[in-house]
Amino acid sequence: LVNLAFVVCEFTAGVISGSTALMADAGHNLSDVMGLAMAGGAAVLARRAAGSRLTYGFGKATVLAALGNAILLLAACAIIAFEAFRRLTDPAPVESGVVMIVAGIGFVINLGTALLFLKAQHGDLNARGAYLHMMADAAVSIGVVISGAAILFTGWSIIDPLVSIVIVVVILLGTWGLLKDSVGLAMDGVPNAVALDTLRDQLCALPGVREVHHLHVWGLSTTESALTAHLVHDRSDPDALLMEARAVARRHRIGHTTLQLETQPLPDCPTC
Image 1 (cartoon, rainbow, N blue to C red):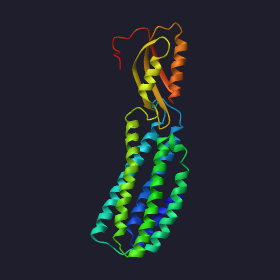
Image 2 (image 1 turned 120 degrees about the vertical axis):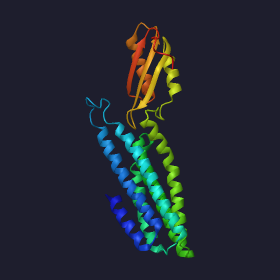
Image 3 (image 1 turned 60 degrees about the vertical axis):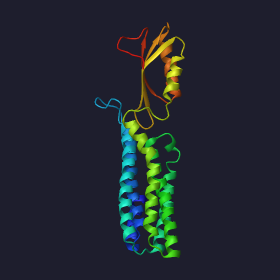
Image 4 (image 1 turned 135 degrees about the horizontal axis):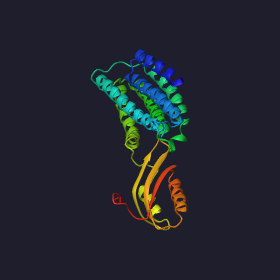
């Protein structure tokens, strides 16, 4: 709510002062508010129990929220770049004092919001999306303050759209990793926290295991992973083998494990 109120104030100040950088920052802040809403809604959905239709539950909503955050950032970049290039061809006077004050307030608000996600963003792509949004805004706000100061001392209004273009580059650099990771999880790719080759080697190294095939790992959400695998073995204690294999999976932060034990490879199970 604080961020949403600031968006209204910042955009209004941008119109009054004639600052495209301020209006661009307000547009980006609006995408952040939407991103925070998506991240929060997804986190609530992820806590809902699985049902007969969604047997894995609603955890994937956090992946979709992270992907949505990345797309929102790209859309914000397009809008900012369009307005900045328009202003480059037709520079307008800017009230630098208003720009600096409003952007300074924005820096405090955005940095404070980002710090709320500082710890969670290391292990949760959904939280990382929110964190990157707010940290990008904090950096952008500082850029706008610098832009206002430069205009105040030089009188060059063209600095304002140039700073907007720099803002776009900064956001794009920060968004690429989020976009790549969220698309990977949406496509049931292996989560970054899981080293698949190491996992395979550790399963193969279990006593009595001769072969591992049909090994698949994917994200159930931005924090939970699942694994399926076929283990060919010659153990006389299959229950103990299952416990050992599950322990290996847990070391890779995989909580949902489905294992098929075989005494010899089935005809339709090529090694993979």
